[in-house]
Amino acid sequence: MNVVKTIAEVRRAVAWARASGKLVGFVPTMGNLHAGHGSLIEAARGACGFVVVSIYVNPIQFGPGEDFASYPRTPEQDLELCQARGADAVFMPADEEMYPQGKILTEVSVPSLSHTLCGASRPGHFTGVCTVVAKLLNVVSPDRAFFGAKDFQQTVVLRRMVADLNFPAEIVVCPTVRESDGLAMSSRNSYLTAAERSQAPALHECLELARQRIVAGAASANEVAEAMKAHLAGRAPDGRIDYLKIIDPMDLRDVEKLTGPTLVAISVRFCKARLIDNILLQSPPKGG
Ligand code: AMP
Image (cartoon, rainbow, N blue to C red; front, side, top):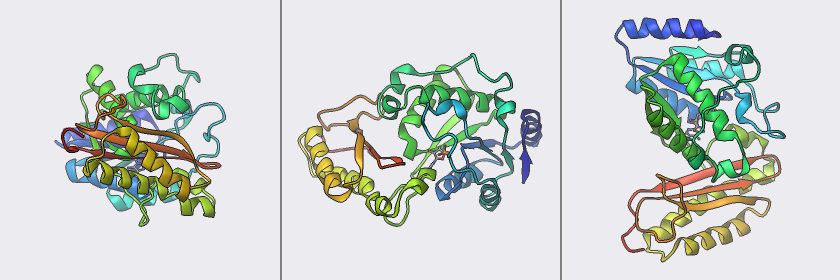
């Protein structure tokens, strides 16, 4: 496995792979890798002959007062996981490599998909994500880039960016990997206290509750949302709902009648950790 720090090196490695006739798969991450990231690397490994992982905590997607400085950084363990899951190259740039002039003047954004859900409580976040992913796609030029369904809005925003700007990469979305009690794996789970950790599976539980209610023919999104709120209030008393949305997975707009593909998405804030999770229901019963 080749560990590189410069854009020139990663481009050379990818050019060599492509010249050898290999498809290039790319897994962008912020490090502190866990089995969720591992599943993306394995998916890339299964689909592509050459797999690049990037590890970069991108400053421009964090707002003032957010956890950029304290975000867990564990490069040695990350490299072990990359090696074990079959990465061919790991790109670990410094800020000076990604933003050599300090402040970046060019931004990429998808405003109409970025102001709801996570974007409502993290203004500018998706512009930071789009801008760094656009840069990384230009650096790595992969055939396929792999993202996790846990960050559903991110996948919707990036798919649209890639389509609108004709990036020649296919976006592949992989399922959320969970702990045994259902909690979606996340680097930010380490911010939870023991008491909060025991309450955190409530997010997944109330998404499962939503699935059951919708499959059983719940009349309205509002009815489902109320049942979810009641579950959370009892099961996660230290959590505060940031958002709880029942939406169209294509345009992220609220739905009231449960007649088509439906995304149920939730964010709950504990003391230091803001957790997100979602469930995609492909074909709820017609007529709600
Ligand atoms: P991050 O390092 O948190 O920026 O995440 C990098 C990639 O890993 C993103 O595409 C995430 O959606 C994905 N990811 C994070 N957690 C999980 C998980 N539990 N299951 C699957 N993918 C995940």
